[in-house]
Length: 335
Image 1 (tube, helix red, strand yellow):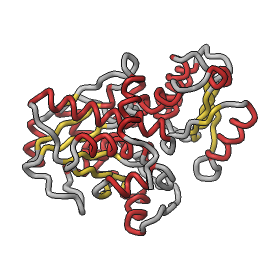
Image 2 (cartoon, rainbow, N blue to C red):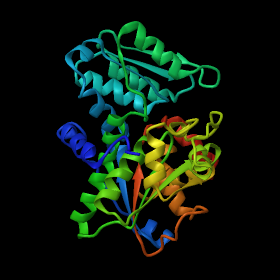
Image 3 (cartoon, rainbow, N blue to C red):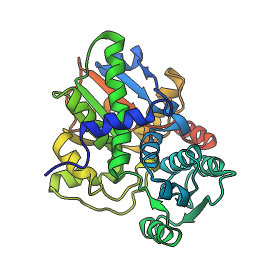
Image 4 (cartoon, rainbow, N blue to C red):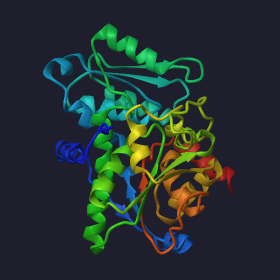
């Protein structure tokens, strides 16, 4: 069975994103290396436009719209980062956007999404209850009523290909730093858009690399799916990693994960908070809980993960969109 995207799709996305997406820095920490025994390379997507990797996939998808599609605009559903990404991309490309967001989305993400839509005619945010309502049904209904094009958060070839440019950049940047490659790549995992794109890019460039996904412990649907050999759907997980509160992998992303990802491990909310603290204290970065998943698994030597000591490891830090008051509360609670 052919996969939803190929390496050429990722390189084509990189060309579309050139001059629009930020080539985010790759950071290192001697303290992190000492703690883990590995040589870690952090791809800081918290410094991407709108604060997360999601800009890559959203802009890639919207930039391919026909003139007719642009006139009607884009609609999506998202807990926050894809929402902001579509709103910003639509604004940059001169089209309206409608974003279906959970009513309990972080205030900072909601405010930013509305900010990106400001002054863009035909744009608005529609709120829903993530525990009682179906966001996909709401999105499809509005798309049908307004003639808008629905761009889901992860299960879309153009979104997947755009997200894969993060790994493509990381591999190039590491080579520029010291001429070396990577033995492993750890990626946060919700619906699978980021890890599927990154796996396609990484396995093409570095065939021997191990790609690992990291889910919240409370929401290990993909881990269960891999064990069962088919997509497992769970209740909306209750975790501080709001960007990974998905109920299942996508129909397009899961086959990529099955074929190219070595395995999926988990991190607890407590481990995410400690990783947020590490990034803030040691690397002077604000990273949202979901953005800490990959690093938390390395720091905690998550069960099931390969022994990474002595290895060169890429770590995707996926985003930094967290309400500052909430950020302070989480860190204070863990003292």
